[in-house]
Picture: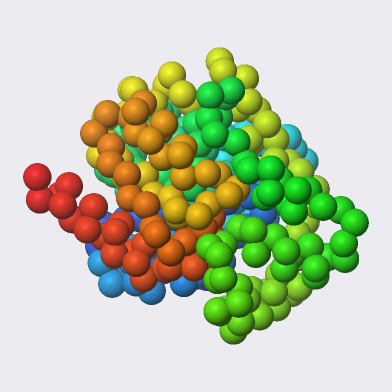
Length: 272
């Protein structure tokens, strides 16, 4: 798949399917691969566009720090290059910050908004659980052990034990595509830049007028599902869907169920 020069960098992207454009924006440290299990289900109904955010994968990795506004501008510039005026915007985790920025700053480019496993920043969101923080901040274990432990705490209970083939593929992918520490740290600045209340999206979200779906895994310890109601309280015309068998990485854990919820939401809103 091609790379386009947009907003001063090379952006790697993929397109699958035809129809209404739908953009999938990945989370911290992940390229478009994060969506690979959902894409086939969504491509039956939409023109699905995935991209490697600035700092990861095959896209450029200029020096940071990055911001939500910068990566939102990257996404809009890519859509400009593709000749797409409006799309369903979907963001997961850090990608949810980017999606919120797009909805607030470029409202005319968004037909529907889907916020996944994310929060609005600032001091009033529900933070990562102590259990998840203890695992994800560990620097004493070897890289493979850290990664496996991270998957255990980031997915639903027993998911790792019940899905050894998926976990092995996930591990092999990460070994072949190690985290670029410079790009990772530059992306981390996106969340850090939203910690102050004035910088957060909390008080900007009421301006969002497009239909919005908020999706969480019930067992999310990285961005607890209680954030869903906080987001919904701020965004008019929004609804919440909680996936009962998923954790933070529901695009990989329960891709078919998540895709079904996305499709139903978008089609229901189109029929109104």
